[in-house]
Image (cartoon, rainbow, N blue to C red; front, top):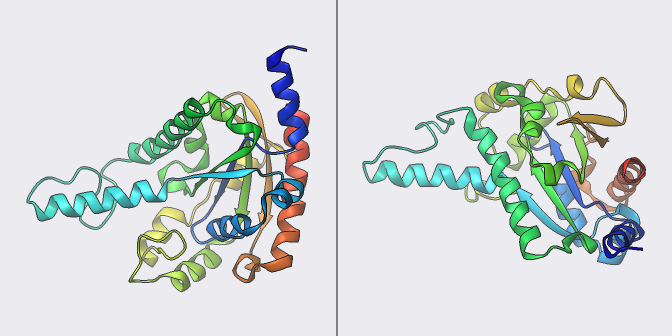
Length: 253
């Protein structure tokens, strides 16, 4: 067996996702899922959820940094670079740039550690509404290095549930926080009421077509807000969703 074949066999035997996209509307429960998974001991996390050491790449900190930089530039009397005074992007292409930044950060992880996926899962976390291209547009900007390793977990909630939790989680003292940031109702409705996930996943109950590849996906149902309470019930539902997803992903690879 070649060294490369040995590495591939080792990765399969380890039973973990190399790259998982965790997507869904704002406040759908993505960050709460990650918070829960971080607390699960590594050995158990690998066994139950097929996740290794977690390397999370989230586009929200990048977006928030742009808002902060533009605020500082405005204070200096200089032109804003990314956003308007009310916090909207100056160009829709900036949504695509965020995805490409995630890809760049992923490339850096692999460059620093070519054997990363022997022990670690990279999680890409983001939300996209139809107003700025939806998930179809976002997926079109992923790198080939990501797509060929990718599985997708979509956290499904209605817009009404997204809005309810978005209002509830807001902490005005920590608007930059992953778990406590929020959007005004008007902006949430404009950007995220329409979601292209139903159209994107309609053709196949198990695989998406992303850049010509079949990418396994699963849906985590969270209309009942299981992620807020956490605990064994959340763990059980995650185990079921990720277990089925891993079997699909492994069969395709």
